[in-house]
Length: 560
Image: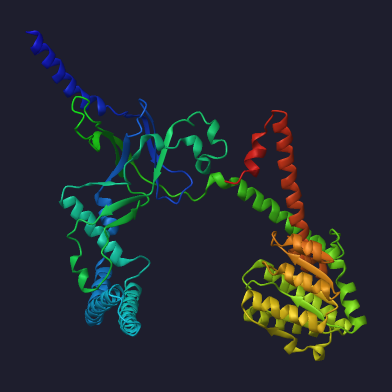
């Protein structure tokens, strides 16, 4: 063979081998397929190692094979099929005219929009533009009304076809799966191909393997979980849905069904780079390199999540502690709890208002009744109202929320009745101002300046208005007692008020004032539980400093 022929043969060999080399992507090794521990029974997990180093462009994906068990699960019974057919017939009869009118209204709205845009571009007179804008909004409102009518009919259809599960979605899933089988697409992808280098390891999944997952012997194995497959619309299923205006699904996510055996495989993809012999040629996209059969497994439901065992232990332990202190509080209502200066001063503040002949103002914060801080403020208001009734002082309670106002009226009324002074209750003193933040603040500050209350209670959650309210109250010379769990507002209350309840002290106030055994025991039990947790954390920190870890302690205090 001549020299020229040898050179040509070598070049041909290089050209042939380049794509082969580019497709030599790593393959999975030591593959394990099984159920995911500690889940609801709808997930599978795959563990493996790559038998090489993947490139940045190397991809992988998992596919699940459609089987008869899955088809049987999504098949409708005769009764379900009749329910769906009857509901569909009802919807077609109800919605046909509305859909026609909506389409016509949409066309008129688009035409009006185009006419308005053209008038603006042509710089027509303002009167003409305003008229066309008015015509557009008329068309828009008509289309919107018809659109709402269509949505109401669709919601009524959904209600008719829901029997513990969406019958239409179930029927579509069954049809999509059957159509995929008929077209030879029996393998359904779990997700789009992902980079091989992006897969996490068992050591990263402390949510499944506990806080010591990184120290496991198999911590370095790659770990991938999936609980759904995406069944694509074959394009032929349920085409008559155009008559109902219902959504046409491009794909339906299907959760894996517990106790059904699934056959799983992995596909790997490589990217063919540009051929250096032909620089002008473009590189190819991801191309299938290999398909590896992983095996068969069934997801299994787990009645007990072992990774949350520490939560169960603490729930039982702290529940027992709290119940014990509730029993002790019933035997001794004068059980010691830490002195809170702001609550000790309640009698002093109300007594000062009585001596000066001035009212007491009480604010419950600016949030709704669904917030814990507002509930705590309402609870304290009941205790304060009872003391005010005993001292025969006046109480003013401005409110931003009408629901909070109604509840505050009932709480104050009950406080006066409990104190034996129901005749002193004045409903008009608990009133609604406005729900606007700074309008409420301005109105409340005005009341402070006019009525000059001798004591002001600022309880609940506050925003930027906290300093305005507290400064105005300080200018009137009133004793101010504040309490909030809004950490950003605490500095303003601390520097402007006489006493401040910080964070959880607001929640503890009702137990402190009432000495009710249930509240008192719960408060004491929670304090003991917190002290116990702090002791464990401190002990673990000390052991860590001296390079000696006690894994049991770390497992207990680490949230899983």
